[in-house]
Length: 115
Image 1: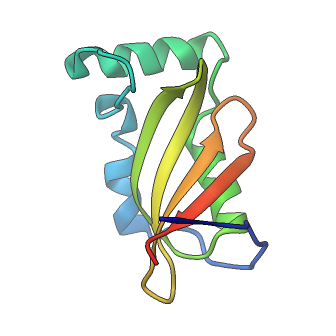
Image 2 (image 1 turned 120 degrees about the horizontal axis):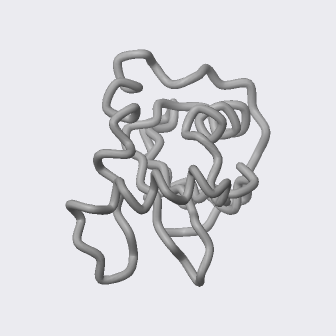
């Protein structure tokens, strides 16, 4: 994948039908370490409780304000000691983007396209 610069655009928010699976985030979180996936939701919930990550709703709002398209997948991972949300977004032109967001600040770090 090639790294693209982030751009500001007035795209719509993710479709409601796609948000339902995302609301199950705490039940389907993955981690980069050798964790048992059955307990990933516990680690995510604990990180949220400690204020180490922002709620998914805030992350989706930040992404939809910057990247037009439909969010189709969300993962919460530890990368180099920091929590990062990784979102898959289908752009209006059909490209699949992988968007990385700092989970503590909701700052967009990068988006990588499939071209």
